[in-house]
Every structure is written in C-alpha cells, then in structure tokens.
Image (tube, rainbow, N blue to C red; front, side, top):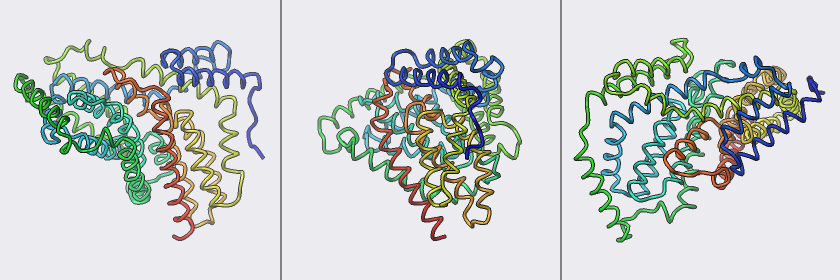
Length: 444
C-alpha cells in the first residue's frame, strides 16, 4: 500500500507537462537547454506548483558553488599556460597515436573521478583533450563522450567520486574504504568492458597508426608544428607552480573533507579565491568570471526546480515506494532498486532522485534487518544512480558540464548522438552490477 498520496492532482499534469516539454526540447535541440530549463522553472512558479521560496530551496547551491569554483580554478590554470605545456608533453610521448591518447585520457578520467570527483575531473580533462586531439588532426567527439562516461563509472567507485555517493555515504555512514572494497570488482569490470566496447566500435578512429604511413606522416608534421609553437611560447613557471600548489591543496581538501567537517563547495571556493589572491597580478578578474559557464549553472538551477515540481506532486515518492515495496523477494528487490534507480537516473538528474530514495530505503533496509546482506540494497542504489546517470546527456552533472565544455570549444554533441553511445554502455554496466550484487547476496 502506498504511504503517500498526491498532494494536489491539479498540479500533477502541469509538473509532468513541463518536465516532458523540457526533456523533448533538449532531445531535439529546439532551444538552448539553459533557457528551456529556466523557463520551465519559472512556469512552475507562475502556475502555482511551487512558490518562489520552494523553488529557491530546491536548488542545490552546494553543487552550483562547486562547479563555479572549479571553473575559476581551471580558467586560471588555462591562463598560466599549464595546459599548453601538458598538451605538448602528451603529444610528444604519445607520438600522436590516437590509441595511446584515448587509453591515457579515459583511464586518467576514471581514476581522477574516483579520487577527486567526476565533475572536477571533467572540468580539468575535457579542455586539455579537445586542444590536444584537435591539434593532432582528429575529431574530439568520441574522446569527450568516452571521458564523460568513464567519469561516471570511475566516480561510482568512491565516497567522494559522485554527488549521490556523498549523499548516501554521509546519511548511511558508509566509509571511504567500504566503497573501495565493495565496488572495486563491478567498477573494474565495467571500466574494462566499456574500454573494449569503445575500441571495438571506433577502431577505425582509435587504432594505432604505426602501420598507416599517410597518417603517420601527417601526425609527425603536426607534432613538429606543436613543437615549433611550444618553443615560441614563454611560460611563467612561477605562475604555473602557484596554480599547481593551490590546486593540490584543494584536492587534498577534497580527500580530507569529512575530517575537516567542511562542505566540498566551501573547500573548492576557498581554493578558487585563494588562487585569485595569489596570482592577482597575472590575471584579469573580470575575464576570469566571464569564462564561468553561467548558462550551465542556470540549466542546473532550472533542472533542480523542475524535478522539485515533480517531487512536490508526490509522483517521485510514489514511484520510489512502489519500487521498494513491490516484492518481498530480496534478490528481486536488489534488481528493482538497481535498475529502477538506473533507468530513472537517465531521465532526471540523479541527485534529486537519490535524495527522495534515502529515507524510503532506510525503512526497507530496517524491514530486512535480519538479513545478513541487507546493506546490499544501499549498494544497489549507489550503483544504479551513478551508472544510470550515464544514460542521457542530462542524467548526471558531469554529462552536462562535459557537453557544454566541448560545445564551447566547437565540438557539437547532441542528445541523440550522445545517446547512441550512452544507452548500450549504461546497459552493459548495469548488467555487470546486477550479476555482482546477486552473487554477493547469494554466495557470500
């Protein structure tokens, strides 16, 4: 029996209608997604689904502040010349081989997302990738799409890797080490199989070039061009070291977040403003702020409000309660939570959904308190939300950021072109997780 009824049937079709229109407008690229999301949010307020205070409360300002702060740090790192130097080193050691470049960047993205967080990693990696890959004469599209997906898979591995993990970990009391121990197998297998899937489906683009004389010649010419340009660039090493030092302290703060007792957004903001103070003579503050992707932040704000409109009608809670109360079979319940969370996280940002699920799942886990593996239900939620977030361009914060950064640099990634890769990858990772959780529940 459902524990919750719709608050106001009049508001339900409005909330569903606004969400559906926003989703379709993003799929078919009818308008800029930030404009659509903010317009939908305002419409919900005008039609009384939410009042202004409720709309403001729905926005996760910690995520917004984190994104803005990391965008500032990345922009200053860009101005220091650090990325140009890194591009030169990567181009030199990879010798322009797309096979090695793809392998390096996807693995760095996965491990960086695990031990920083996936949004921060995407902010750092995507601009470097686009500059390097385009400079070597390749299309960055497949590289950026793969990095987005590897960021979500790698981010699922640790407590700090993905915002939903932070929510569940802090509420339930799951330690950093527990994430590493319990998720290493499904995340490791997912990374391996997804890497093989990308290579298999894009072999013409990613295969080694040492047997392809025309490409090898072209690559050598481009490498010489990059080397010549590098010689003519004067780097301020003191500027670069200051950037790296502050970035290092910021990352250390992320790793020690729970010991420090500070929100991750506060740590990132402290790093951003400390960096601006330290290098203020080398930068133009107005230019730095102008490079922040304000439209992306506006999109997130609008999306949070639209999802809150759905939540206020009670439909998300009803779905969540149905999901976890539809069966008493423990193994089937694991699959329902994993796949239900995964599939819904492809349609709405996984942060609001996990927020709704946590109190409901507490009750369900309590009902199975006598079961030796009741905690597996939390891991099903974590894996479903994180891996399901790969499913569409708006499923997770890292997706939106990665796509927008790529577009800023002239790499067009549409909803449908992203879906072509994301849907099968999401299904692969959810199948791996299903097998792992069922084996764990049955044999261990």
